[in-house]
Amino acid sequence: MQITETSSEGLKRQLRVVIGADEIGQRFKARLDEIKGTVQLKGFRKGHVPEAHLKKLFGRSMMAETLQQMVDETTRNALTERNLRPAMQPKIDLPTEEGAIERVLEGKADLAYDMSLEVLPAITTTDFSKLALTKLTADVDDEAIASALEKIAERNTRYEAEEGRVAADTDRVTIDCTGYVDGEKVDNASGEGMAVVLGQSQLIPGFEDGLKGLKTGDEKSLELKFPDEYPVDTMKGKPARFDIKVTEVAKPVKPAVDDEFAKGLGADDLAKLREMVTAQIKRECDQVSRTKLKRQLLDALDKSHAFELPPSLVEAEFNSVWEQVTRQLESAKRTFADENKTEEQAREEYQKIAQRRVRLGLLIGDIGDKNKIEVTQDELRDALIQRARQFQGQEQKVFEFYQQNPQALAEIRAPIFEDKVVDFIVELAKPTEQKVSSGELLKPDPEDEAEGAPASA
Image: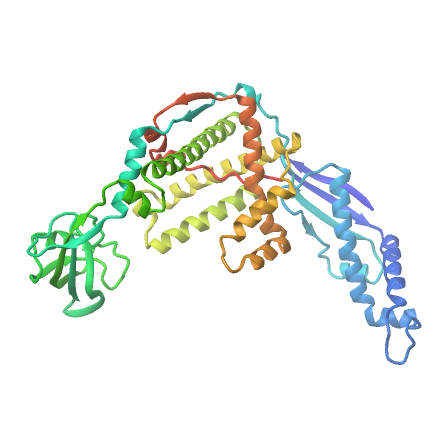
């Protein structure tokens, strides 16, 4: 086997590999000898089929199989000998000249092929101890506990019908409704016993306002218009009439937060419920604190490392992101114009996201490899069990699926690996802790959407 580097530009490499006809012939002969003693054909005793007859029957397919095996082996050997780490599977270009492959298959010519690939970049990591990170922490205060208990009480609100009650915000109004568009009844805009809680803005504009001030037994027609972005095409932007009869107006009755309320939720008393709520808020605070710190760390790593990215990886990541984005827009029946941007601007934005993800993925993988960070079999098994439990009744099938699909199993492994690398860096960076209120820590922040950075094993 002869290997010659024919091109080297940035991360791109091209190698010329030549496998001699003699070497191919020896491998083919070894394969022929291997099956000679096992083949049984009509008219011949097992193991006594003439070699010439075997070549006539199976020679071409066996030679093709031999060549494929040798191409695979020489490709791996070429990468190992030159210490090349391909970013993706190398591209193999076999001879295209007329009759070239035929001569190889007949054992009359060497096999020469070209291997094109992109290699992973050399990465120099920063001094992690110099990363300036701030870890937000919070104690669970009485205000947070009281707010959580209040929300639980609101979720357990019941409604009591009250004779003669005039419907107002927060009341539940039960109606029989018939909707018409273009004079025709619309079944999915009609129904009996429809319950509407006023003030929640769950229906089209004007509908809930039209119910305010009504009492049980009142009838009314509402002349409204479906929004232009309404998901049903036949109703989108069209005027409509709704004939309504009120069958009940009920006031909200929120339960008192006391021992009886706590017992109804499975706690021994209110004190025990407060303990349970406190523990839940603490878990949420710890999780949000970690998420914010991880996002901060990934931002710092992204800004402090610059190296060439393999174009094939960036393209693959961009295509994956772009497919997801366009699919979501189609599902929502929206366009980029609805997002106040052009398709060109969106492509540029998601190209940067793809570059960030590839950069962080390569960087995390490099840090993990250099520091011998590994995902243990126990960690992988525990994560797999957790995933299987999400599919009740099919746990065994899910477990077997991942065990039989290395690529799917790698998707389970990647976030574990990433978290272990993040923990490793955080320990070296020694973040400064900053106390905030639990309400401030848990306040939703669009900037805290953690960027996916799949680990590169």
